[in-house]
Length: 293
Image 1 (cartoon, helix red, strand yellow):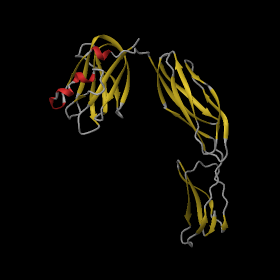
Image 2: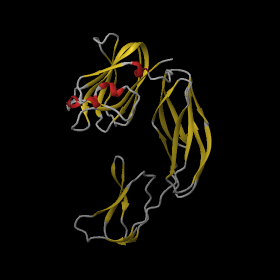
Image 3: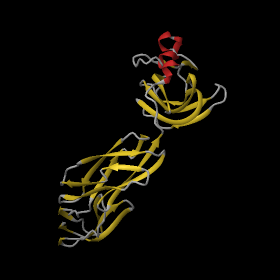
Image 4: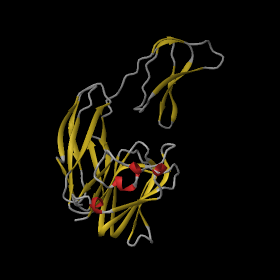
């Protein structure tokens, strides 16, 4: 730092501002003591002449490589590989070279477990990892490059059939928008993504499917129109009278959403709306149901 005046040099870290030394007359060179800082400031000394600063030059230390897996939570089915993409970026002024290492727990396989990677300054290379498991459960998988690491949570679900059993089911709903025939509930289980069910404009609306026979359901896939839910529940029932909340989606982003259930003895399912994302109702192109195999 080049300048004149009286003041304290501070750096900002996650827990606030910290002083690293005083501004000298002329040229000031201060160590930051390995601070992981995102900002630098000069705090004037009260009643002193305003400092005049010509240049502030931060010198960065080589602090390793950031490890950013996508997604941080991965859903896979038993015996079916899933893909995890790991993005790397260097904090330092020099290229970084080392091993990207996954350390899966017993019951989970990651391929490759170790991968030699070069991370050039300013570049953000990525590597894909394959994740497989034969055991249902939730597992934490640490992934590290040198001293820096991230942890991915892997949810392993039972394998589901390829056939959508909702196609042979019957659909009902709490309402149909303006009682229009093109928006009736059967359009949500017809296998046609250009047709849809739409409800009236209130939060508590629902779409219900009666399966042709009782199933052990592994997942439901909801293909939303733009008028999707912000929050909703997937409920199941053996008889259409006694209902169980099998899953709650609290932050729906719309589009196509997979909701994992693992519910046995299911004859009826419904999407129970909690809150809407628009002033309109709920609108679903397809409501798909897949049993466990």
